[in-house]
Length: 208
Length: 208
DNA sequence: GTCTATACAAAGATAGAC
DNA sequence: GTCTATCTTTGTATAGAC
Image 1 (cartoon, rainbow over the protein chains, first blue to last red):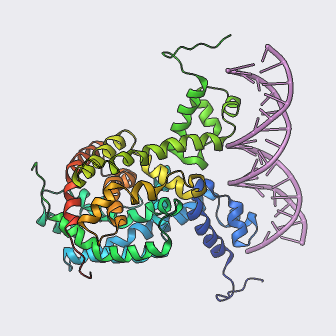
Image 2 (image 1 turned 45 degrees about the vertical axis):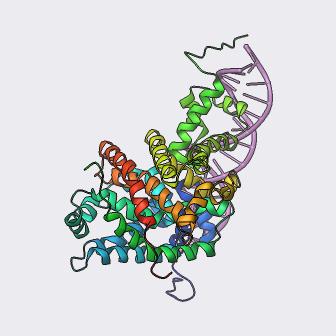
Image 3 (image 1 turned 45 degrees about the horizontal axis):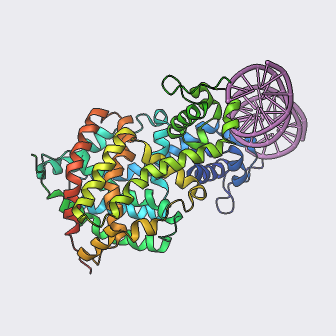
């Protein structure tokens, strides 16, 4: 019996593979990832990857599930808290997202592009309708602005929060905008986005 | 001499390959694309792909250049038109982007994720500083709001315009939001985004 | 210029010894 | 559980006939 449960120094093989897979998949995407890279990074033999997880695809689905959960699961409890005002909900979403994304800025572009490349893998992992469209937040929103589609609100809020992280590689590559400046800007946005959203909510359509 | 310049019925082999490559690359991304797919879709022999373009990578770079130009080149003339007001510039950017994206909704996520995966390929294809940060628009912006970083403005505007296209696959996959509803929404946004941006510009930071 | 055939390399997966 | 060796498939690129 060689198995040792030493949680300090080294982790189980399975966990090592998952950790490495998380890194490589997130960095290069599914298609560009080679299982050999994962094995190497995890310091395990390639064959073990197929022993623990049946295939590259199965392993990926496991990681992807986590990531999707991380990116979208975060908002469910906030959206459906019937005790908080609309303002508070907005502030919480902004705060929680920006804090989480600081630690993993590439999460949005990774998840969104993988979903686009393989919608079938994603399928109905989450019930958007139940989670978002029938949420407490949407109810509150419709009291304030019954004429405004909730989709607009969601796109606006998530766009303001997530887009800088999605566009960042462009600005970083082309020179301007280093990580420090970016960090400062995100800190400013934490304060500004709720104010901006509030201002937008007061704008009425001309046509209507 | 077998070569026929019949521009109506069939196109040159080179053009057929490029057309097919555009489709496949855009749909699946660089890594997941197989040259065999391109050859098949173009109805040409696989060997011809390497005859005309030296490699998969060269072919991709050609396509990518077009796409980047399409996504970012569109804004340069608007940004630097010294004859138009800030309001007009904003409206034009919104109009032109939304019209173009209706025809190719997956362009933003494609370009942004490929840039992220291979920043080196992109390198200094465009001079963001010259094109954006020193643009006429930024000068106008700083007259109105000298305290607001141009980055915020750019992120906000592009986020409101592009994010719905980036997030669309999620909503479409999980059921809600069909293409028709999406189209109607985009039409609404064409009108609303300039108003929203205007409202945001009037919001002052509390701290400052 | 275009095709067939094939070389060559890379990557995913498995068999079987330990 | 882990390793070595190897199979199979796939994907890029080239050689050479027409």
